[in-house]
Length: 313
Image (cartoon, rainbow, N blue to C red; front, side):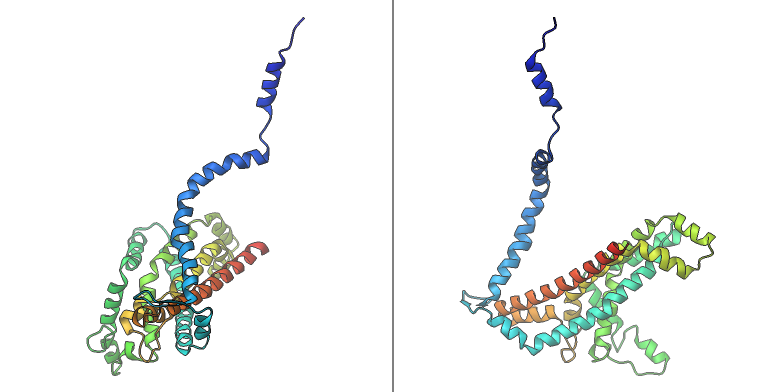
């Protein structure tokens, strides 16, 4: 008669028992922490801590030099609400963003559509258009300062060709801000162009072939195939551009120094002047937090609109 070893049966049953979802989650925690730990530590040190430190400083009268610190509560926020210079800088920044972000997105998309493909000319032109993105802001402002110079700039012959007197564009109340926008477009169009080229390459060519069989026009293919295919990339470009352009500083500081008559003074310039010229770090931090809230609002708005589009699909 065959006898059954109860110990072997118990061992085989123990091996056969699958892990419960709870046990699987616990076993996944350790490798997840190993991979995420370094990033979480850097994120906490360089983003979370400075954010809460900035909030703490904004409740103080905090001088840049010396050790003067005084808790003043919401006094800096009350000052900010009634500060005309802050609202003027905010208006200038919004004006710049409204002009720069749509133009940057549209031009980079047009450039990507023109440069997609694998022929030799397009392959050569892509790094040419991207090369401006690697320049420092100092080089960019020097180049555009020479281009827009009313005396010997490249625009001077254009005015003379039409029989007009060259104008000081960077000193004009009307044209100073558009000049900053043009310099920024020339400088920053490389990255969004590269993102759009990559997104256009992901659209299946079969969709265009099917559209051609149906005799669809170019505009119809653009609106029905291209735009839906790159919608997520377009949302990414818009969010990145909004965050970047709200932080405009170098171009305005070096090309116009906020002038003429403060028409190109932006929020970041006002933060810089308040903190490092007037030594009011507490108030400058309050302005920086206001800028953070503005950028966060528009970024979340863009993501919410993009999420609604995905839901409707």
